Each structure stands twice: as C-alpha cells, then as structure tokens.
Image 1 (cartoon, rainbow, N blue to C red):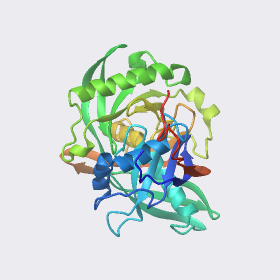
Image 2: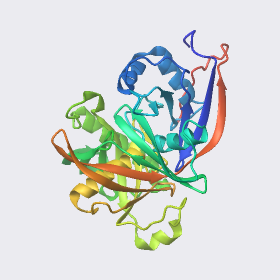
Image 3: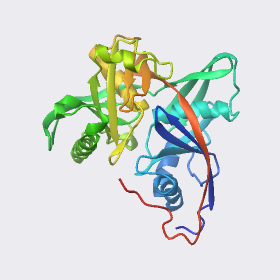
Amino acid sequence: MAPDLPVRFVTDDYHTGGEPFRIVAPGAVPLSGTTVAEKRVAAIASEEVQLARRLLCSEPRGHADMYGGFVTEPDDDGADLGILFWHKDGFSTACGHGTIALGTWAVETGLVARQESGTRDVVIDVPSGRVTARVAFCDGEIRDVSFINVPSWVHAQGVDVVTDRGALTCDIVFGGAMYAAVRASAVGLRVCPADLPELIRTGRQIRDRLNAVDAAEHPSDPRLSGVYGTIFYEDVDPSERTAAEPFEGLTADGAVHQRNVVIFSDGEVDRSPCGSGTAARVAQLTLEGRLPEGEVLVHDSIVGSRFRARAVERVRVDGHEAVVPEVTGTAHRFGHGSFVVDPRDALVPGFVLR
C-alpha cells in the first residue's frame, strides 16, 4: 500500500439496471491532466490512483464485476462535471450505465436543480468525449435518464475469429468503446444465466483473439483502440414480451426487441443492457437498415432489466457513417459508503475471486 493512500473513501453507490456504479466525489485522489482523456492516461500510470481503484473494486469492498468512477472537473465550462470510469481491470473510455447513474446522482445531490417537470441536461466529459445525461422529471421526481452518446459507427463487418466453440464472423462496432457484436446462437448459446460461464469464457476469447491482430484500431485516437468487450445478443420472441413488461416503466414497444449480455474487459459481466454497448447496437442496427431512423430498440439484459434506445442524428466521423444514439434507463441509489483503510491490514488493497 502506498503510504499516502487516503485512509477513508466516501462513496454514493447506485445501480443502473442492476449494474453497480460507485461514485467517488472530487478530491479523493490526485488526477493530473487538463482533459478527462488526459487524466485517464495519467491515472493508468499513477500508483496512487491505481491503488485507490483496486481498493474500491476488489474484495472485501467490491467484487470481480464492480464498476465506478472518480468525479473530476470538466474539460471546460461547457460541461457540469467530468468522470474517470474504472473497474477491476483498469480505466474504461466510456460507460453508459454510469452516465445514467451520474445524471441521477447530480440531481439527488443538488449539483443540478430538481424540476417539477420537463427535462434538464447534465453534461459530462468522459474519456471518449462529451456526453449528456438528459434527466426527465414528473411531479418533481426523476422519471428516467436518457444518455446522449458520442457518435457511434460500424468499424468493421464480417471479421473472422476462431473460438473453442468454433469459427464465426462478428462485427466490430464503436459506441464510445469498441465492441465485437456476436449473435449468441453463433456459438450455440443463449443469453441466460445458465449459459453465463460459457458466455464469459467465449467472450474473453473473442476479445483477446481480435486484439491479438489489432482488429479494432480507432481511426483518429489510439487511446480508444482495442476491443473492450463482446456483445452477445438474441431476438426476443413476441410471446416473451408480456412477462417482461413493464420493467421500470420502460415498455417493450419498439421496432426491434433484443436481449444481450456484454462480457467486457477481462471477463467482467454487465448486469444492465450496457449503455455504450446498446449505443453500439443502435448504430449497427440503424446503419444495417434493421432499425428505422428514430425508431426504438428495446434492449433487455441477462437479469431482465431494460433500456430503450434510438438514433437521434446521422453524422460522419473520420470517414465513417455514424449515428448519435440516445439510451434511456433508470438508476437508483442503494447505499452510501465510508470505506476505511487499516494500515495493519495485510490484504489492502484487496483481492479478486471469481
């Protein structure tokens, strides 16, 4: 343990569709750099910041699938806050479920004003760019939050990869991070808890084997290169929709209804439908013509939670035809933590068991 690691971390703990997001207020750790993207690079190289991340992610304070972020200053006056996303394996470039949680947190902590009705944009600088959490109010309470993402596009189509479950082709899609999109049936699996161990194992293989051949090089920012996760998806049969509806007020009324699970980083599992992964799927389905422009993708998770998403604009980025996705969900605070460090504790910063 670094001798200057803080002895206490105060956090607000939220979940978005079941996926945790541990929020650490500004000042907990030193974050150098002018922009959030620069702070991410500096954090990766900082022993102190890495130790703090590991402390808050690892057991006994966290677990193998923990997620959170250090709140920091925005890049400029055009945003309300900045955020440095983290998980057990490092610092991610984008996090949609975290953005939805931050919009809720900003209102509930008074950073932005609560309204009786209408919407209020919470503008957030993240490593992949500037995003918006559009908070919708009803009778003075938060109804839901829509995450307006960075432009998203199909990076590559029909990419071959060989797994222990056979050879397949996948598409690589950018939604703030690079994802390999794979129909679950292509590897003989379903998006269900019973198949999760094989989904994790196969998702890791796909990510690692694509990264071994540099299959996902970002066209203008090498910090965003590399496959971050594998999205396994399947269509939801109309007969299944009634049982799932309504989840958190988000109905199954959409042009496309799918279920997915994202295996990201080194085998972590997103319990939510994955915000940036959903943005990537909106881009893919829209640009393929399966999701008419402005129509809704209903995206369910492996635990039954739900996002609704659509493309709100078409743009071009680095030569790619792209869309600006909007992803709507809800987040709820479930805890307020004060995590301490005992200097006599030999297990600081912690450990990870799966």
